[in-house]
Image 1: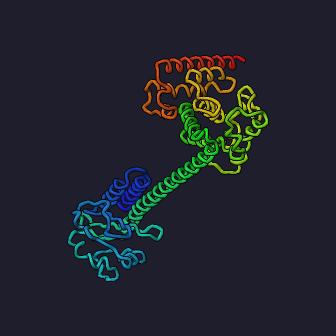
Image 2: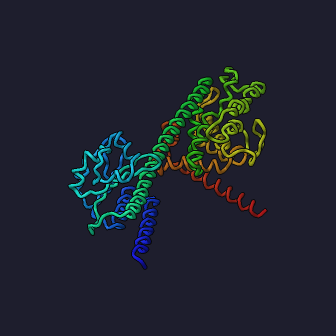
Image 3: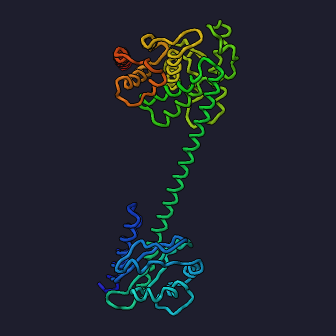
Amino acid sequence: MEPSTQKLIHTFGALADLGQEIAGTGDFTEMVRTSMHLLLGTLALRRGAVVEFTGTGPLRCVAIWGLNDRTLSGFEIDEAEKQVFLEGEAAESLVRTTSTANGFLTRYREKLTEDGIELVLPMIVRGEMTGLVLLGGKASGEEFSNDDFDTIGAMVRHIGVGIHTHRLLEQIAQRAEENRRLYDELRAIYRDTVRAFAAAIDIKDKYTQGHSERVGRYSEIIARELGWSEEEVEGIQIAGYLHDIGKLIVDRDIINAPHHIDAKLSSELNRHPSAGYEILAPIKHPYADIPLMAKYHHERLDGRGYPDGLTDEQIPLGAKIVSLADSFDAMTTDRPYRRRRSFEDVVCDLRENSGKQFDGKVVAAFARAILKEVTGQTKERRITKMLGKNYLEGEHVATLLADLISDLEREISRKGAKAQSV
């Protein structure tokens, strides 16, 4: 095989290796160093360096071989010099040229020559200058041929593309991070706005201030125990905050009645789920089904709820969660016509109404969350704090919860087995 053919094959192999290195997703600095070594090795060059041009300040050395770091310290390119590199021919980048058109080469010629640099080539990608490649002479002492210049030019372009691509990826990552921060800020603003609405709803009812906030938190806790994703958990929390928004259209005297209201007034009050849906439906929420959760949080599994009398499978799971959270808060807070119920009574109600008013899986999940706090399995005391001091104290509380969970899980298992056999 002729030497020229061997050299051509060797050059193509080096370019292929260089392309693979640049296309890799590894460390940026290591990529540039390896690329430079491939370039030096292909032409048996003594020394070289790759410096990055960032547009401001000194050139940044990314890779260096056979040179002292101090050789490149303080190198800068002004706008006029950059323009000469962008518009010039490769020959104008030769340190050995006598041309004075390039101010950069004129200023640093002596220093570069003393350190054995013979070529200075700009890396230009899509009309942008990414940096310079500085190369020493051949180890053999031979002059550079035209083929050598072609090879060097191709490999320098490859390295330039690698640096340019890295910059683009950094910019994308930065923009993605900025977008993420903006998204988080918008979500925080949305949550704060929703909580403000919840506070406005509760202010109308002097007996239940903080109710919507607690329902939102209870709903979040239940969904998290059920294994929902973070986005789904946040959505159900928002639904809990807004579940009673329809009460804004109900007369304040009805909401604040100090006794049980009659059928006519009760019918007026029961309009609030549908009214809530009408208020929320036109809004583009970042979470799905929030209007439906507000509409159906008073539905029951046995079909005796309102406004549509839905039964078990017809009711969205989110609405079942909000329903339990709403009822639990109603049972554990003082109302104008009664004091809050003891925890024993609450557990009895949950047991009695699981499968009728409440979904057994949802009740079991909430009971597990409460039990984890009671037994210290979790350091968080969110439920305990909302219920107040001493409400969940006593060994009997853990027993009540454990028995309830066991009975519900047994019933859920039994129904599952029965459904499979049908």
